[in-house]
Image 1 (cartoon, rainbow over the protein chains, first blue to last red):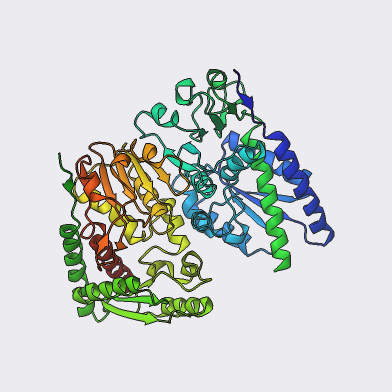
Image 2: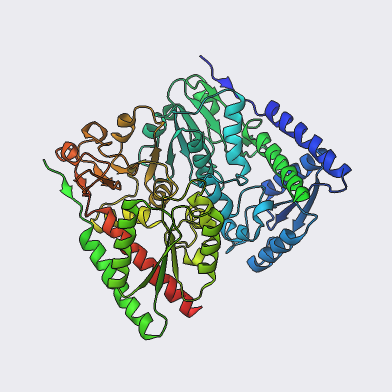
Length: 284
Length: 284
């Protein structure tokens, strides 16, 4: 048996194509969609990611402004900039890129992103509304987990999903989105005793820790679906996930690849969120 | 073997006593702590609960105003009233009592409660901040679950906790508080397949559904700790939990009683939150 590959490319292309159409409409109406990405790091893989978002945005007809505040930026400066972008009518989506300078916390600063422009769901209000079942942008990565499963026809209702990782940007919001789909959800983390015993009881395993090779064959029940959210840079400039794909390929029923799985869907969802935010701003 | 009884009475008394002391200090300073409870229902068990909060508040030297808007109150009226109480400097804590009139949702209306007065953690911003690890008042019932386990010396780190119920007021915030204590957390609900199999794999079972007798012996692993959040009125005017206490008494290692378990701790925590809010308002 060999795991079915749950590619994200086709889904990402379809979301991008829809966003491109909407962006064209907005531009024609004289209100081009605009995304601002606030950066305060010299981290290379972060820079690579920001460039890939900017390229994807521009390809879709979305204006993308990279606001680089430098790796030494003071939290107060970052907060002020988020507030001024929040007040700027020409900006529809705002992302605060991580990592942040020492002493600055995403959860804390993201409260300065206007809720309706919070296209990556970083403002705690967005997370709370998501958890409460109210409209809000979900963190794109968390939403991509559910979107890729939907796209491949994997039903979640009543199934047991183990989410490995409890971050505010992926693990926790993914848990809420999965609960909303009527999955039974277990959140595991670094302090979980006998991780393999917990994850191998699940129908679906979502790995969102950021540690290459964390999930191996013993963590996955035969036939289970594995969603790999990890994007760990390799020494040769490549990218690997949190799942040892070779090790689980024989037993898993299906697996999202890295790269080409959750990643492209995440970027596409950021674009979708931005055009939706722009569209709502126009009709307000 | 017979389950140890995890009473909440002693803990509640100690929290109330501390709150009483702080309330006296606030009153002496000319800024008495004040709690407003907004009611828009004719539900009897709700009325009973509101009276018990009011009595407990007054006993602790906290002013309690019950704002009864009637069972037919329009959501817009409720929202307006929450906003005016939020703007009232003499009010430090605000609770919106459930059930609400048809068409009104707690999650939606509670956004009108000022975050710093949201002593029952009903505003989605409070829930989001809680999930993000930022300071916020937790819903008192959810906090009571962790507090009662702490009080009885039950360690949560690395242990597997099954939370049965995914409500915004108990199940979800309890899951976040338990994660914050390094527990591995599984959230189960009405759509969970084979609930007994899931809960009997856990070291601790938290029942927060509101259905009498839902949790029986087959749901509890021998020696496991059971926290019963349910408060279901009986025909003879009594109160029973979600756990069939007789059925699990032999196998469970410990069990919170109903009444006298989570309930009194919840009320005490509401008082603590109110004096803390009043104290912060004074020093701001």
